Amino acid sequence: MLSLLCTTILSLTLASSVYSEVTSTPSPVKIYASLGSNVTLPCRLYHTSGIMSFGNVGIRVKWSKVSEDDSLEEDVMVSMGFHKKSYGSFRGRVFLQEADSEDASLMITDISADDMGKYRCEIINGMDDNIVEITLEMQGSEGLNGKGVVFPYHPRLGRYNLNFHDAEQACLDQDAVVASFDQLYEAWKDGLDWCNAGWLDDGTVQYPIRSPREPCGGSDAGAGLRNYGVRDKSMSRYDVFCFTSANEGQFYWLVQPDRLTYDEAVQACLDDDAEIAKVSHMYAAWKLQGYDRCDAGWLADGSVRYPISRPRKNCSPTEAAVRFVGFPDKKQKLYGVYCYKTQQ
Image 1 (cartoon, rainbow, N blue to C red):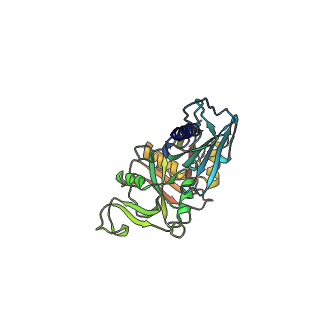
Image 2: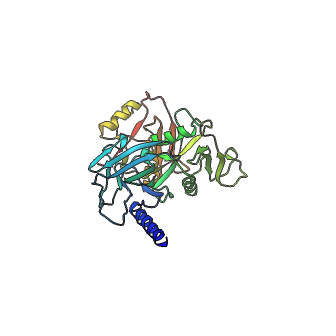
Image 3: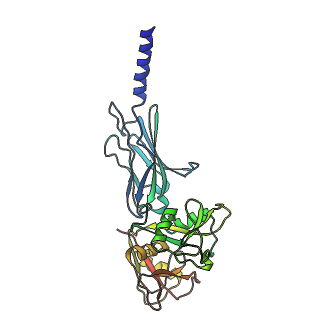
């Protein structure tokens, strides 16, 4: 009886070693990337015996992008043997690195704000179904550190018109993401003072005050982040604080003999092999590169702004800032244009 029991235990142990050859790398993992750059999301197949290759028919690799609560899943890439297929906005931009027979890492080119989020690498090999989760965040998300900038934003409709979901889209439209508390705190330490409350990525609504004053929480309140707490993401409406990384391309004022309407401004940038710049491009150039120009110009969202790094009379006499003129009639021929040219 004892001999039979030992034989059974040995058999179960051997079987377990056979079906546990493949394990995933630890998760979750965070990877940082700047806009327009390329990034590799790590995922490896580990085994203890035998030779396995992603070229073999038996091993399937699936990459997907999932929502934070795992309720939505978007296919990114599927690989089965030598057959590989990418999907949607990732088509033609994603590749398996395949540095060796165990490498299922995903290479993403030309990173955009839409690419930020949580990814899942699933390796299927016979009885095993191993999963690695990687979060892709914008470069500088761990703190400004000269690599990113927080900026307040509201749309043409005016202040306090964004629920949380609209706020997320508003930042994405500007090649940015909703800022975190840590990012806003770092921006406040770096001098950001703003009296309008905005969404942060944790669903709270806050605003940074460096100089306490009556309209902004009271003159007796100390400097810091004013916190409205967690708000209803669908019903509550505020502005938003966005975060963007350093520009990978060139932000510039387009020299033109005449002032332009909005449509003419868009076309003028296109004629210069560029695109009309976004608000995030201006903030990044101003904050991270010291860009300074006293000319008001159109931006992609239909707003008119100009960046001042050297305060002076008639431009921004008291502080360095991105000056906001407003959302004028797009048919007015009163302004120039700022363009943005991606790296070739």
